[in-house]
Image (cartoon, rainbow over all chains, first blue to last red; front, side, top):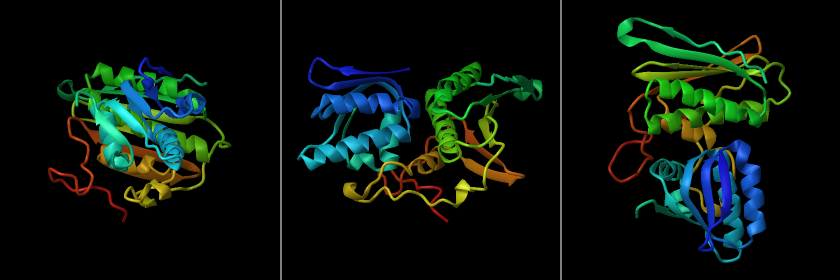
Length: 98
Length: 172
């Protein structure tokens, strides 16, 4: 399952699995959250290319206003997905435990 | 959603494989059931987390492409998973489709500047780095995509990554 919520520190907290069926839910929440730039992936187990699309769209909007998407507590598998997709060079990605 | 499930075990006692096949409706709503099937089969054989991630992702990418690009196709999409102690082989079958060989698709250019990056187009690119082979078969409007993943083999390193290794499955 997938869940998305506001964190206590101004972040958006992701948990579960962000697959293609959950992207509309994720994108609706992100859009409603406004200018939040930091996403906590500590509870996120899985992301697919559909989820990457959600992140890219959001990042581009942030860049347009001088910001950049920052992802924290990213697990090793998802970090590898970012490396293979080149998005480790696009987003500010911080691995879990770093 | 069709729920035809065909579990079976085959092979010698020394290398018994587990196989399960089910049909799924052409909808992203099928993903939850698909992942449940994947977990069930892989957990039964003790497949590790990294391998399970790669297999689940490859199945999702292939299934969602079939749904997106052939939503009007007749019939359900079949998924078969066979898990031995050495590898996992998965097949997705669309019984009513036009021919489209995914192996002919080039890799995504992941080095473009961000303003040129587009959402989409990464599914096949990522699958190629996570599995060992992808085969495409087409006959009588039936498309079959089969991939195989050797267990306990790391995902392929991106070209130019520190630590060596070469990127695999560059566009032909």
